Length: 334
Length: 184
Image 1 (cartoon, rainbow over the protein chains, first blue to last red):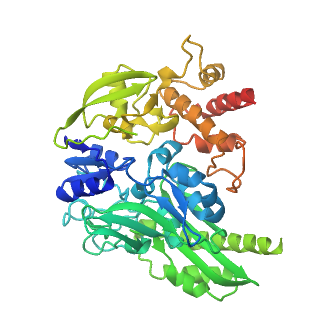
Image 2: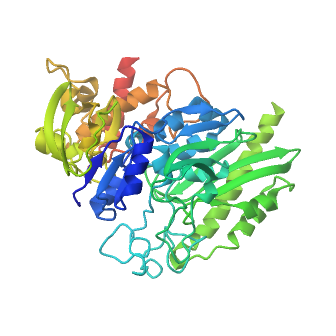
Image 3: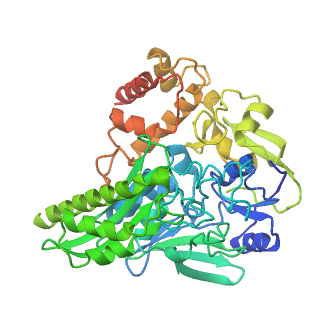
């Protein structure tokens, strides 16, 4: 690991100034991903700017009935929060589906959003990787790509975004609050992430010195009828092969509205807007859930060893939505 | 609250770590993880280095009572916290922590390398359940008051961050259940 300086500034403005002023500086909070990447040689910051204790670490109600989650909230506290569990179960389930008890205690909400892909080639500095070394090539297309993207990839990169939490936040229309050298701003989660195109090293729209300070959830509306399902190679403590976050609003057997996002299938948390459009106003039946999934997955461009994810995603979407529709009908009857 | 450091260019810092109630003043290279500080600088070798990448849980220690992977925590970032290692779990008179006694009683290990991490993890995990935290194995997320009832599936899910390559899981679960029942 490269030697590095360490700075624990007194306030967020000083932290932002420190990172803005040095191209080799990086923020650190939970450190669960960054410290690992430094050990692997994938990241080699010359200065770590510690923002633990500077970021908001509370979950507070907003004036419009939603929740504002401080970026310094630990993943375990987010999943345990009674308001999150009751109003946004998809989010609590997604967080609990990720990592381990130890890692959730360390990892922050802001850091979770910005964690890097677990693509084997990205994490191995002896291999080419367009994301790590632009222009060096991508061995994944002809190599190990079973866990990589079927949607949103490019010839240069088919890495997947590893977060479970971010998939739930995508379905919930979360808004990310950022402070930076140019002042504060807020952007929808979907505008935080970039598709790889021919610049897979540019993963987000954040600029140097930008610090995520909070994530805001709009009022739950029907988010109480939501769930997260993750498929992985072992029962626990593994990154996803694919996952689904869904929220469903059904009345008289008809879908009034649906929110759907897919995880571990794309370089970004994949909001399935095509499927949502198909579902609106249609019968809440397995047939229509399947049509919606097919419409979304029509854009899939799988590689030989991950074509199974297309079928898997369809099956999981249909089953998830069917279960949600059933639970909502049961709720209506009570 | 952590001491705020304001010099950026040094690659090492003078720092204080409070481990099992004892303060230690050290100068450490910033690259030093808490795990390496404990083992290589403080001689507390009970905490084990397994994968060194946050994937096995052998390095689990408690920070303010919460379990964390000490291999992914830089020592310089652990200043101002209360660190508890396996050496700090037993009573001062040497009486074993109930989990330590239960692991012995149930033969919950073979080689023993993962055991300190398992026990530290379990100690904090029981606190999480007592505080009502849900897990991926919980039948419902509906907030409830009072502790969560831990069946074997719950224990396995909540302990999934601690691998045992000898496969002593059956007895690890039994040892933890035993402690739960005795506490009841």
